[in-house]
Length: 273
Picture 1 (cartoon, rainbow, N blue to C red):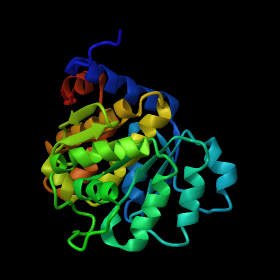
Picture 2: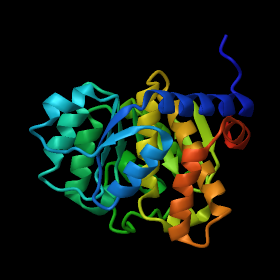
Picture 3: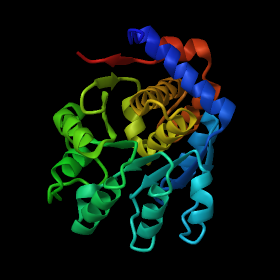
Picture 4: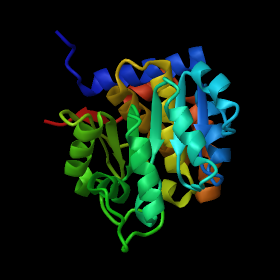
């Protein structure tokens, strides 16, 4: 019988996954947007993973199959990069998808749907992105990369998207919700000021990819634990921060310095009834 997934269980599992990342240094190919590359690489290195910012189509047949996981983010989408994204997603490695601003244009929606068809292990987005992707429609009221909905608003859409795509779907917000279409898990670590740092969502999606790469056996658990640990690092960083710029620095330091006691007692994850 499976162990009951109490808060203590989630704390132990989060620590085990972070420890696995630190021990194995999973190689994660990151095809991510130009704005996010710096914080994505630094957050992953701080957690113990090995990021590779490689997107040249001619290199992918040799490189992508060697990776432990692939992370694809469409934030600064271009026609030139889209074939590389599709090739990396088709390389036979577990991959994680961030459909940034999916409703911004018809081209972006079409690109995201074509990537979704390549069966990511995890899709992570804000509530507005998940609502748009689940309904497969662009929206003239979208607000750039920011969400105009609460994460709870997208919970049913996330479950439907998980069921139709086969992916675990994570909806970020004040409370994060993670679902495989049947189970729903909440993760409630983090601080509001993290929203004032560009590309923190991109960084946490990359961290999910690192956790999946270290242990691909349960993508839902990997996603929930990565979101909680990143949020916990934000909480610790906020204790020393004076604003968004210093929070960015202290968050990365906190991620690097997390220990067993802090993780097992600090992550806030629960399985919803």
